[in-house]
Length: 185
Image (cartoon, rainbow, N blue to C red; front, side, top):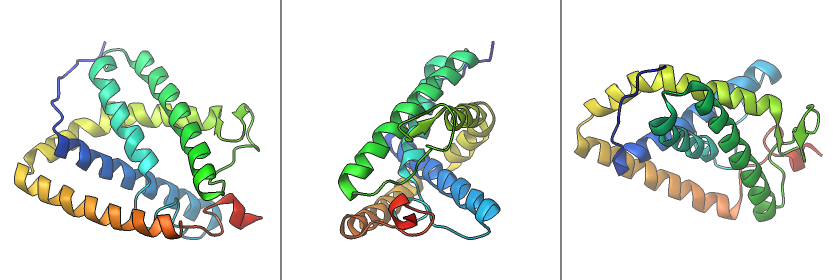
């Protein structure tokens, strides 16, 4: 059994985690495409260095960890389940709003409508557990060292930049080769 430590998440703490996880997801996908395609591809609907699906998923994982951290297999299962729902719902919503498909797992075995696949969900489960058990303990200590007013200031700037990016996305989502499926056709 893993030792469980209770963490109190303030609103600014959660906002900061959202942006950290969104950036980690963006960096992961950009690095993946550099390794596979040999090219920098600014992944996602947004123009900035963030993928909100990773930020949202990361926040949910941290909240799940508060209840399930002492049960690694349950936590893994919960992360996989949440990732499946989040990825599926996001895929459908993006397609309905923009008319474009942003990812397609049809080429993978055990996929559902090309929107989610077992392989990806297992990667998210492993990554989520690494985040909870290995990354978060050190990250929590670093975030707690940031004075509350400074943290709030950082969050305010990030939210303003994110909202400005969202306004641009409403007019014209980030699209192109390697970003949306429609651009590949």
